[in-house]
Every structure is written in structure tokens, then in C-alpha cells.
Image (tube, rainbow, N blue to C red; front, side, top):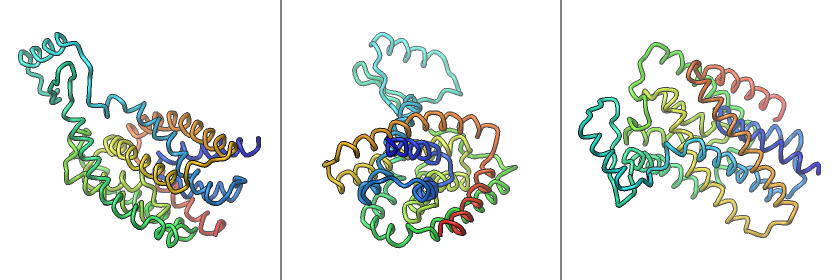
Length: 297
């Protein structure tokens, strides 16, 4: 029973820290020092990655209309919609669509997925090949604390630089191929150095090249879907599918709690960022980095 409660606590921390740009790795390291799960080292390595599935499910549900390109519509509704598009010129609505039978395909979302895949390529190639090497070299309290502090300072500096600038990219569909590649490179940095925070790195990279805060958050969340699904799948394949009953229960509780927590946190961050900037997360990262460096190390 105690281990199940611990799994729920890990799920809460994962659901909060995965989406805020504050490093889930740093927080999970601290939590593991305080209330470590009574499981094998191999299973814990799997657990801390696979509970991300709950967080990903939350993104898929909340962003469904932005990431699913197919709409199943009756033929006469499609024809009427196309007719209205021809008769009424609306400069604000630039959605590109085409139909395949009774299916309406949103080209903007199709291209969004192509850009997401493009942004994933650098991290996918490097991380899959050198994942264990990076873990061995950088998965320690000193590296994590330095990553927390450096990127915390980065957020504070970037927010001061862009404070009075107008963002060039205001919507997901405005993200260019070049922008996607640059954000992908920042994601690669997070894949190499634990503590950077995947969401923190991609948001920071997006802000640097003129993406608005809201769009940076949206693209980061969408980008997480293939990345975290892939990471979870790799861990499961390495571990194998031979789980003990207690391990399955612990994993299930962690995933469920992570899902529920993520729903709340994602909605909260979207509302927060409409009125505020990321400086508060920068200060928080610096404080957390110092805690990890001084106490955990």
C-alpha cells in the first residue's frame, strides 16, 4: 500500500514538472532521495520514463482539435462548406483543406506533423544511439544542477531581451521548417543533458527565434507526443514485458495520477502564460539547482 501511495506521489510530480519548464529529472531525483520506491533499479529506470504516458495522454486529449487532421463529414456538408469558402473571402481564416471522399483533411495540421517529425530527428538519431552513454556521463546531481541553473539564467535573460519585441510567429501554422529545425536542436540539448528540461529547452529556443509564448508552449506540447511515446516504448522493449503484479500496479497508478495531474497543469500553464512571462520559472530553476548542488550532491 505504501509503495502505491509513493507511485501516486511520483505521478503528481511527473504531471507537474513534465510540462512546466523546470526539469522533471531534477524533481524526480530529489523525490527519489526522499521517498524512494522499493523496486529494482531496472524497474525504477523504466518507471520514471513510462509514467510519462499519462502525461502524453493528457496532451492528446486537450490538443485533439489542433493535432488531428481528419474530420469525418457528410458529403453535402463538405460541399456546402467549400461553397461558402468560395462565396465568402475571409482574410483571417486561412485554413487549407481538401477532401478525400467524406473525409476533410486539414493541411495545416498535416504540415504541423511533418514539422514535428523534422524537429524530432536530431534528438531521435543521437538519443537512440548514445542514450546510455549520456546517462552514464551526465545523469548525476552536478550535471543536473548546472543545467537547471544555466537554463534558469537563460530564461531570465531571454525574457528581458524580448520584453518589448513583437513576436514574428503567433500561431502553430506559422511555424516554418527552419523554426522547427532550430527548436529540434534545442530539444537535442535536453536529450543530452538531464536537468535542462525538454519543455524548457524547446520553449527557450522558440522564444529566441521569435515565436510567441503561447505558440512556443503549444508546439512544445505537440512535440512531446512522439518524443515521449518513443522514449517509453524503447524503455519497455529494453525491460521486456515480464512484470510482477506489484510492478504493474505501481506503474498503472503512476500513469493514472500523472494523467490527471497533467490535465490540470497544462490548462493552468496555458492560462498563466497569456498574462505572464517565464521569468518566475527561471528563478525557480536557479533555486532548485542550488538545492540539488548543495544538498543532494
